[in-house]
Image (cartoon, rainbow, N blue to C red; front, side, top):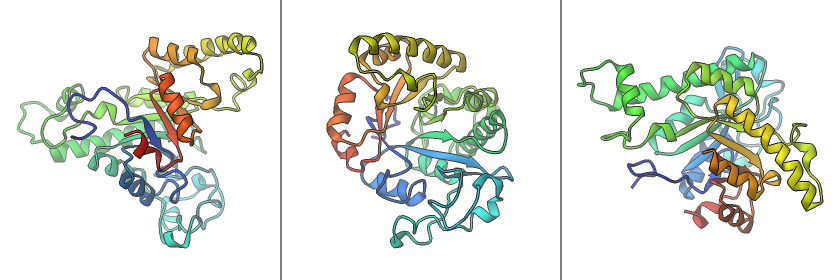
Length: 305
């Protein structure tokens, strides 16, 4: 049975970082296919926006590290970006791999009944506008797929049909729950506010940036001090989650405590932990009660299926 068939009540325990972690060129379609073959059904990707408002996958603001291009990606047109090579930096075996459009990755997820955390990166355009663009494009892509899959013999218009199907587990050709499939995430509150304004039904998750001074200076050595400081952190953090109407928290492993896990459980926030590659450490976090771990370890899916 698909992960998204009726009765789904649990999250996949491990999530492939940027497609396939460090086992393929990051944020490329070949990376997602590779991780899928290794058993992953949940992924993260990084999204940026070109100067002509095309969404594409890229982690860095600049092109140099992972492509044969130069300069800021979001100051260039999609026509230019689409011609860049994005695989050979990793290995000559991947020569010719290109930067994917956002819609291509969404198609992959829908076609293969997979989940995706969409990390939206700030760029040249206004953060709030960027959040709106991502949410609207995702909504339109899902509508297009529903329109193609659902027999429009229902006596209702497409918007009402989609709203009804969204709140149910779907029957027929699209046999999974859309509301569980995509999560828009960002460390920018404005991006999340924009996504909510455009399409409030799409779930959102806040990413804790480890260099954010609201959180990063709380690392102390004393167990007593740690508990006190983390209490302050939690109040700030959960106030922000509530104001942004988020359903998930994505946080580096160094900030995870049993108290944080329990607070997320009490307030019904999904808790995803980043920066964890060792199998033993993944297992410890899952036993602590975190929902899923985002990892670069391509072998983790086989251990936590």
